[in-house]
Structures are given as structure tokens and as C-alpha cells.
Amino acid sequence: MNSASGCAIDRGASGEDALLLREFSHRTANEIAAVSAALHLAARSVSGPARGFVDDAAGRLREFGRLHKILAKPVPARSEVGADLVAVCRTLTAGLKEGTNCEVFFDVDDAWVDGRTARRLVLIGAEIVSNAVRHALGEGGGRLAVSLAIDGGDLVLEVNDDGPGMRPVAATSGTGYGGAIVKQLVEVAGGGLEVDSGPGGTAVRVVLPLHGEVRGHVR
Image 1: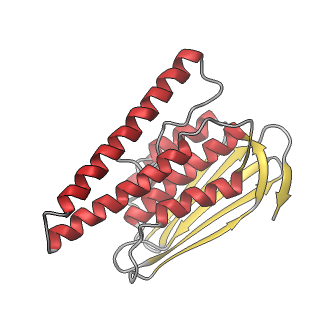
Image 2: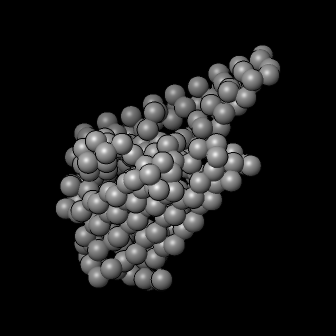
């Protein structure tokens, strides 16, 4: 299950497409609720290591449910991109176990920008961070840094971790760190994507062009 839900409703979609997206989002929410209830019942009937596995699964599902609620909202005309990105990333990193020595840092510009670009940026960030949490921040801990800057007419997102890095074929082919989804979203937005990965960690840089006026820019 990818943590970055693709159910964001786009105002640019046709009426029929928007209806189908709303129905898909509604069904997804119902399935999350049903599985959560099943896991809650299962947790009451098991103990020991099995109980830990069930609790972990329930926790991850709760995080996915919160993320789904955020990303399923209709795309507004303008959005506070920095705040939206941090909210989503905090949801994705909330399940990191205490005692694993994991550190997550944010350094973001904030501004009201066009909603469609902001939503794409948040979806891209969610996919990258989700995979970094899954593959880079292991039981031994690790460091994850997320930054967002407004540079002229561009949004610049950087996600860096100190994990083991990706296999060379994954880094170059776009199959690592949710690469296929990220590449598609970046291409649709007319942006650029750079991935630098090695034994000391992975750095992902995404540049998306802004459209329209930027308001309330705060560094």
C-alpha cells in the first residue's frame, strides 16, 4: 500500500471524473474503517509478539487514514503549501517508534500558491517521505530532512536521509523511493527531478514551476 493516496480531487476534472473520484475516495475511507475495526477486534484476541504485529498494523492504517482525509479534499484555488507539506509529512512520520533514535527535520518556506501545484508538490513529498520512512529509517534510527524553498518562480523540494541508499538500478530507473509515481507527477507539472543516492544516504530534489501570484511568502 502506498502511503501517498492518489485520490486528490482536481477541480480541472470533468463532472463525471470528479464524481468517480469522490466515489473512490468514499469507498477507500469505508475500507480503511472496516479494516481498522477488524484489527481492533483481532488485537483483543491475541497476545505476545502477535499482538505487537497487530498493533503496528493498526497504527500504520490509522496514519494512512489521516493522510487519506488530507489528500482527499478538493483542490482549492490557492493553498498554503509549506503548512500542507509539513502536516502530511508529520502524519507519515508519526508512526516512527520511540527509542529508535530517528530524527525528522523541517525547513520550509510558506506561501499561498496555486492549489494544483501545491497539491502536486504535497503528493510528491508524501511519496518520497513515505518511502524514506520505510526504507531509510530502520530500527537503528536515522535522520530525515525535508526542505521547501520558493526560488523565483519555482517550488524547490529537497528530501535527504542518511540511510543505506538505493541500488544503482533503482536510483537511475525511477523504481526507487516511489520513483514511478514521482516522475509522472513531476512530468505532468513540467518540473525537474534529481536523485543522488549512495551508501551514505539519498537526496531527492524536485523543482516545480509556480503558476500565478505568490502571496504571503515567509522564509
